[in-house]
Length: 228
Image (cartoon, rainbow, N blue to C red; front, top):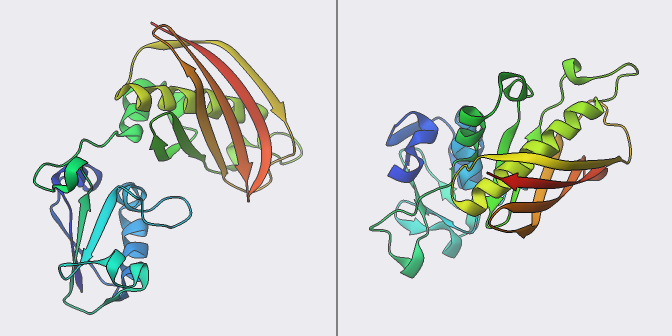
């Protein structure tokens, strides 16, 4: 058994818990793999879609920074302790940096039919956001490929999350234009949807969206949003 200590800024991802008990040990990677499985929202805050530690998160194994040890291959024995701490300006950990909660924006501001797509926020930055659209037979059109409407809705949603991340929280907005080009069919695979803001003004935003499945580009979109 290994104890994972959760900082205050990330406890909303695990129902407010400050400590988690995991069965996995051996390496830090094994511990984080179990965190991903049992608490996926927290897991996405610690590692990116490639499984690498996010640059703004520090992970300590029994008080030692894993980055000066062996990274995710750092040994973790049974009874060990793993501590997660967000990086903050100036290197201090006395105050925890606020974390933009894209999944909360999704849950609080989108219609039920959008939420039923199963979209999750994988990562956000100062002018971009990556969402995952999970494969579902419900989203397949005749012939078995994912519906273009689902992909367009995902692109539209990713733009909202990107704008919200840039603004530090959700702001009312509406779609002015959405143009999509489909490159290849999606069959039985999740889609990563990355929206990058190309211009963000006081009343209007422009974004470029790429949609990939198994590393291949499946669709590309551009959007224009009016900020209300």
